[in-house]
Length: 226
Image 1 (cartoon, rainbow, N blue to C red):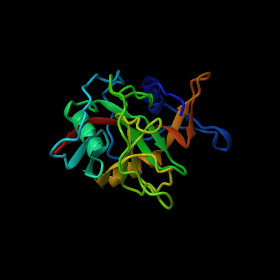
Image 2: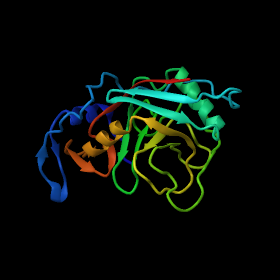
Image 3: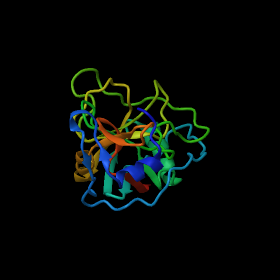
Image 4: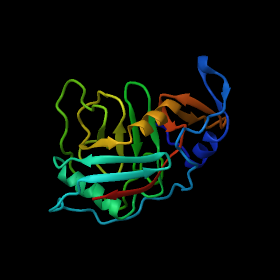
C-alpha cells in the first residue's frame, strides 16, 4: 500500500473527496457516529528494549481507547512472546496518540494499527523482529471475524503493527494470532462503512479505494493491559 501522509489524510478527511471512475462525484464525508476529532500527530516510533522471553504471568486483556470508542481484546496465551511484547509496548505508552493507518474493505477485511509514523513501515526502534506464533491451519477461513493478528514483512519480522479483523477473511496463514475482539464491534463496522481512500500525489485529490487510509480517522488515545 502506498504510504499516506497523516497530515494529508486528516486534511482530506475533513474536506471534499473526489471519487474515481464510475463513482466520480464530490462528496463531503460526515463524521462517523460516536467519533470525535483526533488531536494527535504522527511521530517517529520510540526506542524501547525488546523482551527476550515471555512474561512469567501473561496479561489477559487489552483495552484500546480510540476517538471512536473503546475496543477490548482477549489476549491469547498460545502466542506468549507476542502477548508479552504487545503488553510491553502498551505499558510504555507506545501506542498512545497513534493512528490506525490502513483499512481494507474487499476480500481482506481489516483495520491495521500500531505504527506511530502512520506510514505502514514503523516499528519500535532497535527491535529486530520476533518469531511467529499460533499460526492458523491452512484452508478455510484462516482469520475469522474478531481475530487480532500481527502484520509483518515476512517470517519472524513481527514488530508493533497489528490488525483487527471485522469480517471473515482468507489470508495465507502467515500472521500470528494473539487475541480476539470481545467488545467494540459496532465501532469497527461504522469505520469500515465510511470507507478508505488514497491521495493522488499529482493533484492532491483524494479518491475512494478498497485498501487505503480510513476516511474516518482512527486515533488510538491509550492502550492498557491487565
